[in-house]
Image (cartoon, rainbow, N blue to C red):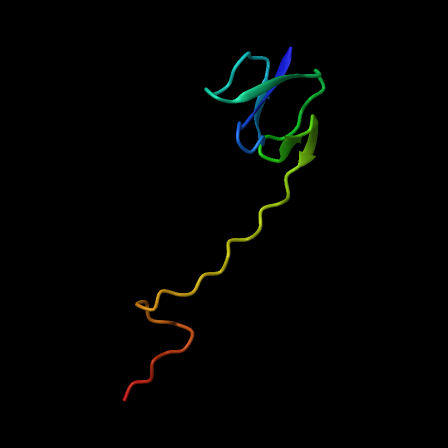
Length: 77
């Protein structure tokens, strides 16, 4: 029997295979032999696997004011 294993908080698929357990605390459930979803890309919601939205690019943060900017060189006197 093939089992899927998901994070207990986010319900995101972590792994699947022909084993009874993955990591301590992971939630598991039986899956059909054809199950082959990519871990990290799917989440179980109300017994339905849905695609996890693509990660957004990292938020742009303000530059550290202690670091000199290379965008606008400091003019020398």
